[in-house]
Length: 417
Ligand code: SF4
Ligand code: SF4
Image (cartoon, rainbow, N blue to C red; front, side, top):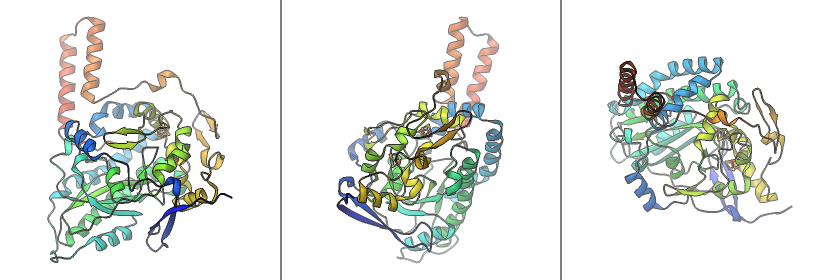
């Protein structure tokens, strides 16, 4: 048995309120930096010169297309979810303007009270940090009001998640959004009762990518699957933030060893049916990370009930970080790697795939619309012009009408996922 030297041990509260604290051993060779390696000046440069935009706008063309490849059952379920979820997204959108209901106790730090309330509601991870405006989406620049971010992760059901990709797993995925939308309203009300303001940044109408703030608040590190790996449930959670002007104390980023562990593990990279994940990290907008190939992922996600095989096959999701990191210290191996238990999955209509086996798809399978809806509309219109040489006045009018609809939609917000 190889016993590796332990560089440091991370102590974290239990997965749920009332559970014992856990310890995570980080082997010497897995230690890097707390959070994620970053070049601050590059993050500043990219956010200033190339601000991010929400996928609800930037990738709206393929998001709309996904509805055309859903199964009938998925289509009906998504319609149902969007209907149930819309009031929660709407309430979040206007939450920043709601007045406090209680009085501030001058000089009192309310971090512990908010954390306690969030844990009572069932959030598995709760952390505090600055709302980092460098990540705010272009369309949300004037919307985000307050300076502190409360990062909240709600775990989705373990066993439903292990059936990925399936409708059962989608019930867990979208059901968790519905649940946390309600908890968010309750937690915001609680913050207002302490005399402060609270703005809910819905997970379905994001103001920014939230993962960098979760990492900064010490709630996990970024995995090779492009998701937040939190110590208890890997990426088996739905995340969002509440910003506030309350008196709070920030948490600090933590090195759980995941940044380096992903290089040893690579299970999600090898198991991704779309070959959308890459082995090596790159420097991207000032952070060192694995960059997912969106165009290879999206068609698989859309066709096969959200896919999520990169979540399913992650040992940290399956077994939790304490067991995975202890196993690494004791053996130098990745827990479950190479076993059907961790790596096996079934794809509707294609069968079961064990370690080393992957489904194949035709080239056309990856064809889908690209960009924003107006970019895609222009592309299609240009194609029509080049094919026919001219557009009829009716076609030109249709084009103008469709463009007007798109522009009107984009000046509001979109609760689509
Ligand atoms: S969701 Fe599926 S296709 Fe997309 S990266 Fe994960 S495993 Fe690959
Ligand atoms: S499967 Fe392995 S490589 Fe992928 S995110 Fe999880 S720990 Fe990292």
